Length: 577
Image 1 (cartoon, rainbow, N blue to C red):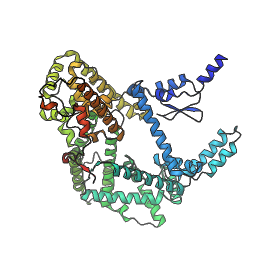
Image 2 (cartoon, helix red, strand yellow):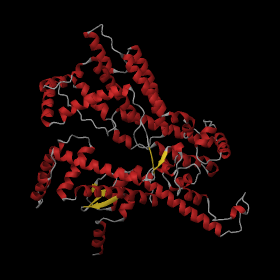
Image 3 (cartoon, rainbow, N blue to C red):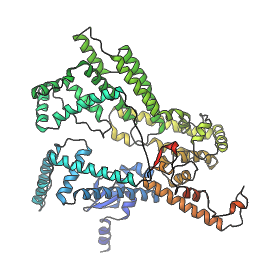
Image 4 (cartoon, rainbow, N blue to C red):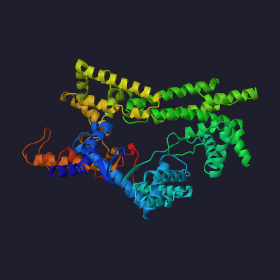
C-alpha cells in the first residue's frame, strides 16, 4: 500500500515544479510556461528532462534559487494576464473566447482574415479523427462548428482587440508621471514620393487579396502563367513586411496589370516609367534594409555587434550612392533589370538616377544622425571586450556613471600589465569569433532554430568580467552600473540607482522601477539603522554640523531624490500636468 501511495504522489502535479522548472498544471497535463509544450506523464524526471534539454539557456541565466523563482513567477503572471485579457474581450462564453483566441493566432502570424474558415475546417477534420474514441465526440464537433471564425468575424475581433490594446496604452501613458517623445523629422520630398509609391502598392494588394473572389481569380491566373504563390498583405507592425510585400509585388507585376485590366480598374502609374523607377529602387533598397534588420535582431546581441552592423550599412549606403550616380546599378538588381528593359525599348530615354542617389544620401545622413552616439562612444564600446587595448579619454569616462576616474585608470593600468587577465579577454574574443562564424554558417543554411541554441554573446562577456578579482572592483562597477539593464541583477540595479546622475526611467518597465525603489528603501533603512547604532562615529570629512538631521546613507538619499519630479531638459523628459 505504501508503494502505491508513493506512486500516486509522483503521478500528480507538484506545485514546486512551477518555481523550479517553469511548469503549470492545465487540464491534467504539465504545461511549460516557456515553450507551451505539454507533458502528459506527470513525473518529475520527465519535467526536469524537458527543462534541462530544451531550456538550458534559461536555466543558466536564472540559476536555481530566488532568481529562477522570480523569473518563473514573471512568466506565470504574463500567461495569466494574457488569459485574463481574452476573458475581458469576450465576457460571453466559450464560443466567443475560442473565436478571439483563433483570431489572435491568425493576426499574430500575419495571415489573411479568410484563413479563419480554413482553420475551422482543419480543426473539424482533425477532431473527427482525434476524438473518435471519446464518448463526447459529437459535443466537441458541435462546439467547433458553432465557433464563429468567418473573415468578417476575424476582422471584427481584431478591431476589438486593437482598440483594447490602444485603450490600455493610453491609460498607462496618462497614469505615468513622465513620458518621452521620439519625433521623426524626416518629411522631405523623397519620403513623400516613396510614400505615394507604397500607398498605391498597398491599395492594389488590398483590392486583390482582401476580396475572396478577386484573390481566388488572381491565384488562378498565376497558376496558369507561372505558378507563383501570390501576393502578401502589408502590415505596418511587422518589421520585414514592407520588403517582402514589394518583392512579391514586383515578381507578379505583369500579372497584376493583366488582372486589373480584366477587372476594369485603372492604375496608369503601374506603366509609368518614372513611377516604376522609384518602385524598383524601393524594392532593392528595402531588401538591403531587411538584411540589416535581421542582423540587428536576436537574443544576446551586444552593442558591439549592433554598432558594427550599423556602421557597415552606412558604408554600403555610400557605395549605393556611387552605384546610382555612375549608373552601374551593381547593387540594385531589380532596378538594373528595369533600366535594361527601358534602354532596349527606347535607347534614347534618360532615367533620372541622380534623384535616387540624392534620396540615398538623405538616408545616409539620417542614419548618421540617429546613430551618432554610437560613433561618439566607439572606444567605450570596444573597451567592453578589449580593455587591454583601449585608451579612454575624459569624455568616455564621464559617460560611465559614478566611477572614480583615478581608480578606473589605475585598475586599467594593472589589467594591461597582467598577462593572465589579458589572456582572459583574448579567450573571450576567440569565443565571440567562434560564435560569429557559427551564426553566419547557420544563417546561410536558414537554420534559425539551431542559431537560438548558441550561447548569447552578452553572457560570455559578463561572465568574463565577473571572473576578475576584487582588485578590479571599479572596472566591474563601471560595467555593471552603465550596462545594468544587460545584467538585470538586483545588485547591479542598486549600484546604478544610487549614483547622482542616474534616472529611474532608464529602467523602462514598471516592475524593475518598483524593484529598484524597494531595494533603495531597504538599503537606506539598513544604513540608517547601522548609523544609529554608532551615534558617536563621524564619517571622514564631516564635521559636527554634518551630523544634524536624519542620518541616512547614500541609498536613502537616492530614494528620497526619486520622490521628486525630474524635469531635466537634457534628457527630453516631459512632466505631465
